[in-house]
Length: 365
Ligand code: NAD
Image 1: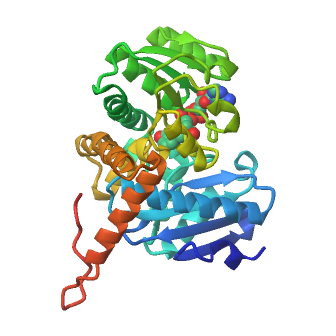
Image 2: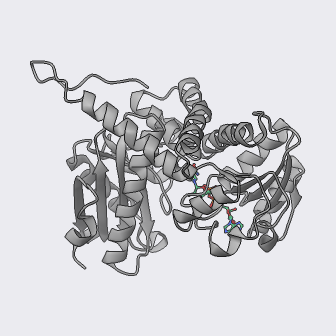
């Protein structure tokens, strides 16, 4: 299948292929939308089986970033990049700097960040060649690891869900099952313990489990029992597609809210959750703390301002739940509606230009 068949009808603005033989860099950058601002999204470094698989992935991820940034109230669009290959074998200073130089040629239409297969340290290297990178380390004036802030955003989302399901934005005394206690899940357990929630966790990594148990006194449960666990909140914080045809019938919770991306195997599973009376916090809304935090670097990082914005995930979810109720739709459909409505409204304003054709004014959320 050709490139155009993949992008037709999806409104992609730009897709760029970069290659540098000497460093073995092969990268694709997809700019889905700059309607609200520069397209921000991480760089995934992954051993794709072929170029088509890489293209399909970068397009899917870039589209998701448009929704995530719009729903988060940011003046940013959606984009993503993939570097094809095994990062363990291929990653080098030369490759990352070559990548940085290519990113620079896009003139700020695309801003990169870390993702699967790339790290904070990698972004510090990319930054030596381009200013269009965010999520750098504190040493370079960056915001550092976004994971604890993502966890804080999930906590705000859980409170909004609790308000929707139980009538009070309180987590005290609620039972929460956390799948995956890695960077985000671990920090989330800490917040939940502070709130007085009862936390039960599972993980494939015994070391990560032990850390959560010793630091927060959480209970553990075998991997396959997390879905059927009798809890108020199920928090997927490991991998995607965990709400699927098999797990739906097992669920024994009132709320699904976690940090994982692409939690629903298919959008229709959002409908099924609605039918089951389960309040679902759409992943791209509830896990936006990380992007909100790194995007603040673009204005000179200010942690207090970033955290304030992350707290707005609570109100965003309230708006999403209201749309879902009013229009009798799933929360995931409502969240898309919310994001696209904002894109429509704000991008219309950008048609209003000063006579000297200066850039449109920034519209602060
Ligand atoms: P991580 O790799 O640090 O943690 C993932 C944890 O899940 C690990 O402890 C791993 O052992 C565990 N795990 C893997 N497979 C599992 C399984 N089958 N069952 C139970 N546990 C399993 O990753 P992270 O940064 O904490 O991210 C977690 C999720 O949140 C990912 O889906 C990621 O895409 C998403 N996310 C993260 C951020 C962020 O700021 N880090 C932001 C947005 C979304």
